[in-house]
Image 1 (cartoon, rainbow, N blue to C red):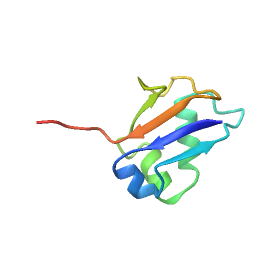
Image 2: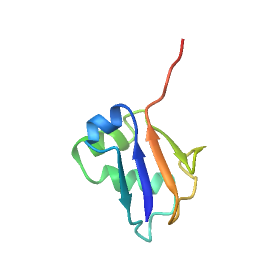
Image 3: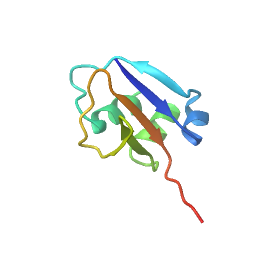
Length: 84
């Protein structure tokens, strides 16, 4: 199981702030996880199919698509933040 956290607009769009998720054997990295989430359809597809700008962190470190994910990890998804 991994813990997945959704922040800001993602929390609102997806209707969840977090979830526990069992990783299928074929999901080994962040890109695989995004594909799995997008397959849920609707808002999930919109946010994770590559059209939306969504950043991610694995175990509180910024991550890219090739970052491995494994049981016990914490993955956070959040929109880009701009400052002034």
